[in-house]
Image 1 (cartoon, each protein chain N blue to C red):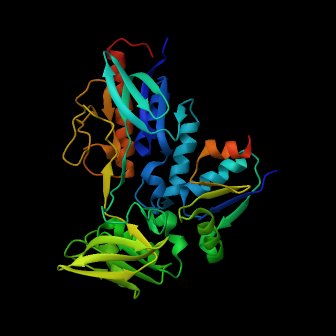
Image 2: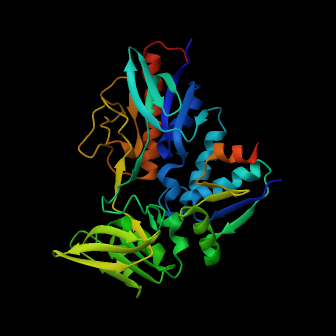
Image 3: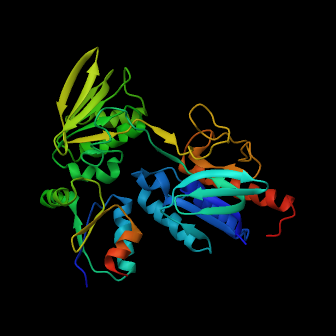
Length: 77
Length: 306
């Protein structure tokens, strides 16, 4: 199982969708609500150099936005 | 032999999805090509005027739309931007980034997108503190200073959302006074941490890696405000660039008649991308239904078997 993190907010439609997509594919992930945690915002900004959500981190491969194809590729699904 | 659909729908916001549902129920062989599902509705915060729902968030409504379309056997291709639409004899061709599709009829329901400021640094700082979606990105600015650019309802809505999160909100408005609904302006007045700057034009967004300040010009004098976030809410433009050869109005909206027909037979349009009176979720949905039913009549008039 790959180490997967999702950085998002509860009000962003694509964050909800990306998490649902991972669940549908039986992928376990750490769900990080950046609106509740300034330190994790900083962590996300350091990783990506930007503040847009969602951000998916799959074993260090960073995907900004809900990009199904890239997520599946990174997960080797 | 190339595959020819009965109908291709461009866009999957309220207009496109409703058109697809009606098309599916008429057993049309239908393809939906879209960047995303839900369109602008997904980005709205609170919706209180969609019949049947006294209150629903944009996100919830968009996922209900998605559930509804998935109930039917409609082919949906997401993440695909349309580049060109043209007609070859009786066939309408739709070229996307990935493919070219053919159909007997097309409904353009590609909606609208946020207008850009045209200020220096805007592209550079996009998603680096500058954003076009307060609902999505607002929560990241807790305790920070932010600027909302604009003075209409969407700017007021963004400001009201941010006032609950940010330390200080500047509203930078190009006009003499704020527009939008009186109800919204009254809500804004309750807050102490808001400063409205009228008659001001944003000229520059600056910073090192992330946004650190915004510069505006007022009465020929430039001023700089220290902010970590900039929310651009200055209105919308139609996603109609790909629709060359189709008549549009000055705003770039596709001109349609009362039956959603454009000037090109076989090409129809619905929702916010069109010149229809008023842009509302429920109006877009209604127009989408109309367009699909009109396409059905258009195809059967030619003796097409569906």
